Length: 68
Image (cartoon, rainbow, N blue to C red; front, side):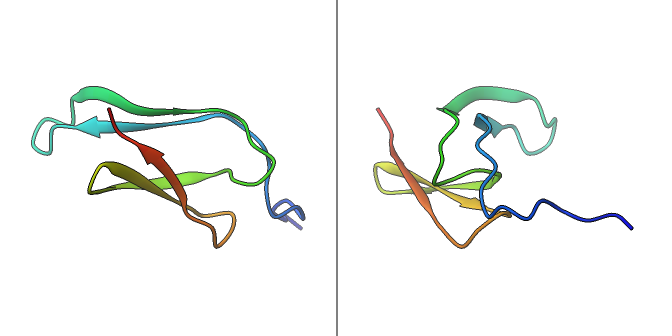
C-alpha cells in the first residue's frame, strides 16, 4: 500500500519561477523559498499587486511574498 505523508507540512525549500509560456524557458526565480514548518509543497505562484501568493498541495494555506 502506498501512502502520502501523514504530516500536513513537510518542511522542504522551494522556488517559484517565471517562465516564458511558449518556450517554457525559465526567465527568473521570483521566490527562493526556505524550508518552513508552516508552509511547504508550493505549486502555484500568482502575482497580486506587489506580492506573489503561493498555494500548496500539502495544506490549505497561502504564503505571501513581497516583490522588489
